[in-house]
Figure 1: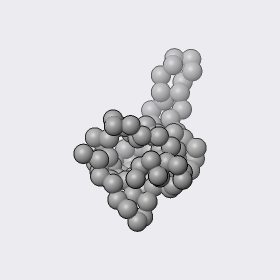
Figure 2: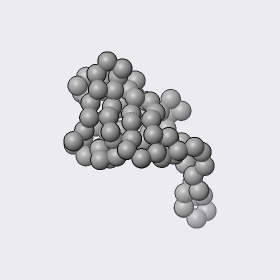
Figure 3: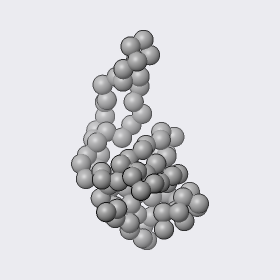
Figure 4: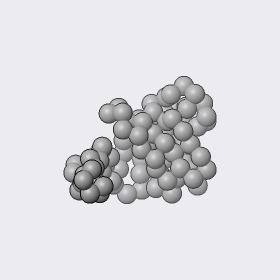
Length: 87
């Protein structure tokens, strides 16, 4: 199922166990440290599935940001018709 979504570059909906800020994180290039994240924490978001392994999933957001999310953080991934729940 995940391989099929990846091949089709399907838009999937991801539901996380805990809310987190899902935005691009600016980096302070002088110090090399990430700047404090701003934005509203979200428990659900959508994007295109671009890669997956037994340990994590890589999603491209509509803003072109790429997120790598550990499977233990994910409750479910769905394309609107089929729902996948990592174990």
